[in-house]
Length: 384
Ligand code: ATP
Ligand code: MG
Image (cartoon, rainbow, N blue to C red):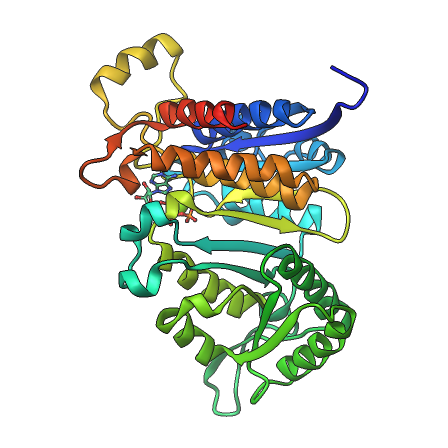
């Protein structure tokens, strides 16, 4: 190592199901891509979710949150599985994920949805519409109707049961997510579309006013506004018109899922969750996929034997996690070159015809999770 070596501490949270398999691949890719850019990683692996429940009785141990907070960035696999599905709410693996997001105070959730030329046939849309789609949804993650008060159940004057929630946004919450979105657009194609319902909702009226005000700090970014109902339609009709989209918690929940279906491949989609300062949280958008998770809890000798019998092992697509590692480099560490290295290696691997089951089509080479990792490493090493 030379004096110019940059060092980062990364917390790895493999979690459950296919989490450990895909994290192991992403870790290798980070190491190799980093070595080409004079970057050295120190990894600390900590339990979260069901794995943490089995080990410590809670889904997010204090030690895990502390390690995450102290690191430069956090890479998470996936959380949850059948085994813990009947647990009480505070003992559910997913509760650990919510606690982790809250603990890291990550209020901005970035979800890119790109239709890669190699996978254009995976899209649910017609080829002409899908080709070239490359957009990013920036969703506010810690405010809005999911957290607003008052909320609850009550009865109305007729004695009927009612349920109610409140959409609340304060200026500071809108301003900070808007700034993340403008910065994101600046790293992309310089276009930002703010999605709201300002014709009906007061919280949206304030949203539009604040986004318009913050735009004065970003004269280089082309800002537009769109009502959410129209945005939902435009995403299907002509998704190529979008570069970066910024929206509130509930609209972002819906629109980011809609956008991901345009690409049609859940095993390919990464995400980033960012806070004001402190480490970001990076994870694939897919879940723990218990239906295809390897038998990682059995002894390795048994596992080798199982491998011959159970064809569910090693089926996970690790590329969503590998691409999350690229987002970690770009948005978490500001290491753009290393991020690009990983992204072009993924594209190169796909161009060379390698596919996991979820993105397989006839004529391509079907391989498993580990082998996909090996191929990506070859692509990283073959770059100039
Ligand atoms: P969540 O944990 O968010 O509730 P879920 O249970 O709804 O997620 P996933 O765990 O994402 O859904 O799995 C949905 C389907 O997609 C499953 O059939 C799963 O096998 C498949 N899948 C998910 N991730 C991958 C992946 N990385 N590679 C291959 N297939 C995947
Ligand atoms: Mg699930």
